[in-house]
Image (cartoon, rainbow, N blue to C red; front, top):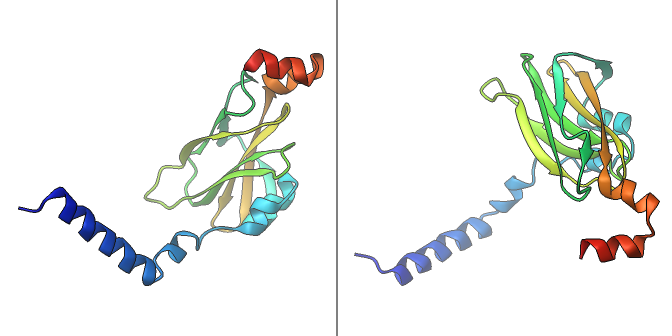
Length: 163
C-alpha cells in the first residue's frame, strides 16, 4: 500500500514529465489575443471569425437589469441553433469588449454563464458565430449599481461605504 508521501511524490514526477514534454502549451492554443484586445463589439466579433452580424431572437443573453456590484456581474448566453461554432459574451463599454469566448460543438449544449466586471452601465451582447461565419447577436442593457452610485457620490465616500 502506498503512503500519502509516495503518492504525492509520484504525482510531482508525472507533473514534471508533462511540463517538460510541453503539455501546458496546448492549454493556451485556443487563445485569440486579437479578439480579447479588441476595443469595440464589432472588432471583437470580426477577430473571432464573424463575417456579418445580424440580430436574432434565437440567441439569448441573461443578466441582471441592475447589478448591485459592478465587479461581479453574472451573465449568461445561450442559443438552440444548430451549427454554432463559438458563443461570445461582450460588454460594450468595457476597455476590452470581449468578456468570454466559448467553443461549441454539436455534442455541447450552447448554454453558458460567467461573471464579468463592468465599470459602468452598458449594453451586454451575446454573439453566436455559426460554422459558415455568420454571426447572430442579442443585446441587453445592464446597469452597474456601483458605477451609477459613483456618479452621484464622490469616490472616496463610496470606498468608505463599501469597506
